Length: 331
Image 1 (cartoon, rainbow, N blue to C red):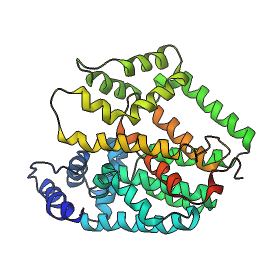
Image 2: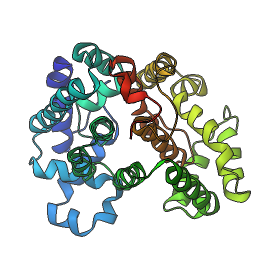
Image 3: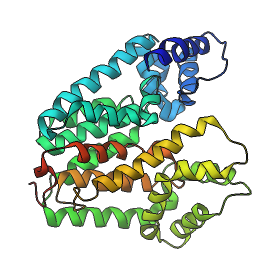
Image 4: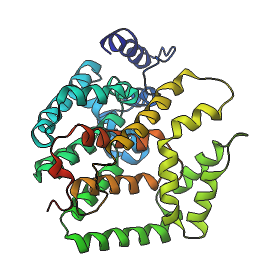
């Protein structure tokens, strides 16, 4: 990873900032170029005053502005967060840090996002801190998650607030809150913010090998108010998206390899953790997983970048020796 960062990814990011973009390194998020160019062409004041113009790019742009475009400092920022999280995970989850770190970095998307400017690794860190909150019930980890969401995307901020609110409710009220959430989404799915743009992207992504399952699921959700029955199929397609991509295009693309491997690892981690995780909403850890799945299901097309943080939740369950975290009632 150090070699990849020092001799490929960092020089490429510097080249982008200097207007001399070349061949993108293998382990690098394609959106990084966009963030660097937007940061180059916008000062911090314009970013803060015109946040809707930069949309979901404002977080990485803000991060670049705070660290004055120094990629080494941003990497150290990521490392500092990760090391702090490992210490707390060892305390509350009783994990073997070395095994967890090895499994974490084994996922090529984690390695990829760790080394460049992006918001995806921050989404994973947020999930980790919310997991620590689920184990410790200490609000400082909710606060840390909210602070990180500033550099991520506003959907994560909303998700954190929703999770915290529902986690404070008793068992009966949790069911009520989730049912109300499902009802509201069911009847407002087609009018959700940004949905029209996402559907346009979905239509443009169709090719001769597209089966049309995603389009059919969205047809059910938008025109027949059947969002609730499309949740599981959409999530399963997101998990296996890397495998779907592998067979969707005629020409082999090496850029798909990390996505393909991440899908396989997520499926494998799911099966290894399934016996430990009790999928019940009055367990704070499982509540986190369920709510995140519901959040991802709102995206009208499967995408690995949205679903892949659950890999970290699965390996936490695999590595944790604290079985009390997964008991039927942890309140």
